[in-house]
Image 1 (cartoon, rainbow, N blue to C red):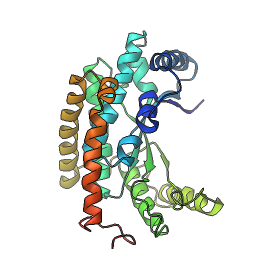
Image 2: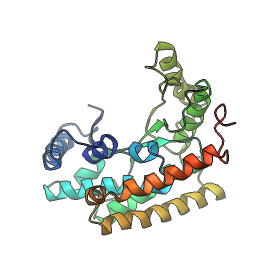
Image 3: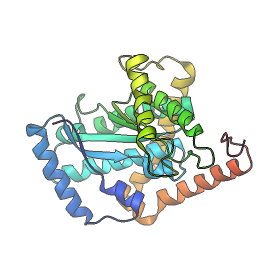
Length: 277
């Protein structure tokens, strides 16, 4: 068995506003599935930490990294309390990160997440194998246009390219018309072939960390990692991600960032081609 069951109760709460069961019940299921999968289906992951709630709500890269990392650490803590050791739990976790069109920043964001996760797992006592990040990438919805949807083809291509250069293990390219209607066969085919061209024709997938060594990307990676770690420590001081969600701290911070982003778009300080430019 390969793939991921994608249990992400805190992600569902953040994205949907509610969970159709208790958190304690979700964590019990998570622990049971993880303990089963480790010996019986070692290539099957059971947990997926999504960044979509923070990205699609308008958060900036540091917030997305910090809250995603805090969610992953919360899951490790909850599993440990239920008898699942760190070296069993961490490899069963996949991170699903949403990528936007700020090309170099998004590459740095994915690289920074790998550093942050390694640091957090090491601090919890995880070995080298447990510190490795399993990374799924999904193209953004936040920046997609209903006014000029064909430009979404270009945005998704840039985002997919950034995801590959950032080191993703798997990818979902959104259809260019997904913000307008249910995607049809044509738009789904184009979305699928976008990543197949990058993989099969451009042969990008065998290259490890192609942006490594670039002064700009390395500097951006380090800056993002440092800032996100500080925000993550703030979440931990509140008692972890569940406690932070209950008091509304991440929601308030991301809401303030989103308001600034929308103001910049309205004032044409940030360009969205075919919408405000």
